[in-house]
Length: 316
Image (cartoon, rainbow, N blue to C red; front, side, top):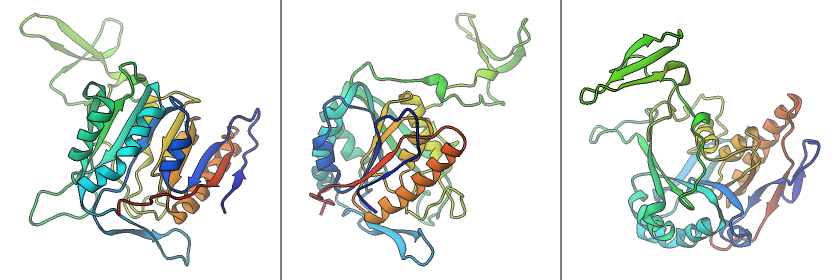
């Protein structure tokens, strides 16, 4: 049901989060300059096919959306005005994370370099996974690319929020310091300088992420929405580049994984999708998770479920 509020009785109440059904372009046009702290988008990959999941509710037809045609130049033409708005609405410390695969990533990176500037490119994050089919004619295509751009050189980054365990069997020796601390240690052969890395502090991940698996068919997070991303992936992105109370935006939200993680991490969010069944799925998921947070004593912000006019729904 659209044009309603999902309430969790948070006190004191703050500005409601937004879940919007409609084309993202008019939503972007209505946002103020420098009003968003982090944008994550997982747009259509340009497979030229209908992407199907499973029934979201018992008795429903399978959740599905029509992907854009497999024509990357047309795709870039379609997404170009959205890239320009991403740049406009981001705060000076804000970041864009754009999730793509091999079909469009090289085309979109050139477009992003032109909009944001090549100097604002931060990382090409390679998300590696193994779940899914394999090919007998190629190496298995088992990675996506996430392009990270900062609005300015003063982009926010919180490395301590995303540390992971250090590898136990690395090239470094493990020693115990005079204070009883366990560290990984190496000595530079040229300078003789000794480097020590406390094991208990972990490390900031590299730009290839092989420790987060994509969702399998039986995963408890599964909603039925096709190509649903795991919450751990969005948790690393959101925790690493935003702070509590920041506004997180996802303009191709699907089943609302970005919004669910933002809700749990106490960020504001705006989530948009053109598909009605995506909004139904997202609203149900966010309401359930919000009620769980409220029952645990940390009610999230209310959510306004809205509809806007749809301008151009796909790169057709």
